[in-house]
Length: 406
Image (cartoon, rainbow, N blue to C red):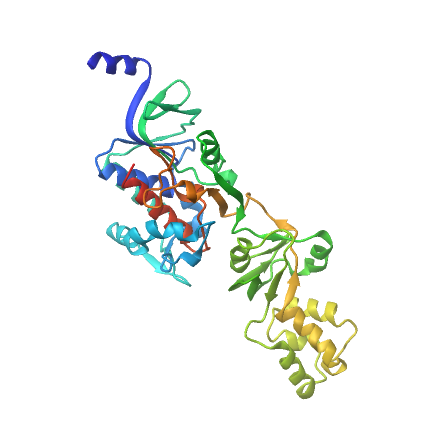
């Protein structure tokens, strides 16, 4: 036995019970839980620092979970109920408990979103400390060149060195934000082992307009307004921001996950205000006022001026406008129908929609049904949460679930 071990060491072969590829939120959580079970764990990442997407999230303060993250309707997937098993067994309160044990200050911002009071770096340091306590090893700047079956387990080639493991966990995320090192590695491994992948696309991403519309909206770049935006049956009430390429802001990032090319979105830029009734009343009570003056009471000034100029050109006073003209102006505000031509793509997308087909995974363990010992967790899987901490909670929960079994 000693002779065999010596031969393996000489050949540059290391052995672990579990290898996790990806030192992000899901990967580190999985390593912690597997390590707690006494498993020998190695975490590999091609980046030079762990948790890079954690570090930049939430404006550097990490929106680490959401109090509503246990609800299936907050996640998009070909099977939205797939996520419930992991989310119900490792809940937001469990991660909050971990954060509290490390005395990391946090606060609820809006809509159940929890942020660090100080820095996202605290979350990374907490996870690294937990990994160390669990005995999990971390190796950065390590690119996996090849993955293959080795007996009942797996062998990874790392440029001159090889690592064997019984369980292999792919936690490399999706394609979003390539400048942070994102790649399609998870999908390549899936293809190699015959694991189906649901079509992927950028999600939680700004939407873009065609050149002509951009030219007309040019004066609005940088203007923000609270809106209700709708695509099909889905709607969100949050802020929208006009940009040089189109529209962004929380409401638009949210609806982008539901929008598809060729569809229009409907934006109410004065939710709760019936602009037609407001304008009719102004016509009677303040008929000599300019339209832009009336509109600026409910809209940012630049937006009010642009709508007045484009929807009622030449009208000096509200009294000059017929009810039909007033209706046209009101609809431009309460029901602005616009058809984006695309999105800003993976470059700025916060997450990737689609991924490893959930039908191929065990919902309790995240192990592939046809490839024993092979697991996929986090963003790599076809489970995509809303904006606001939902995707981090999926990372913690799916990593935790795989860590109980790998």
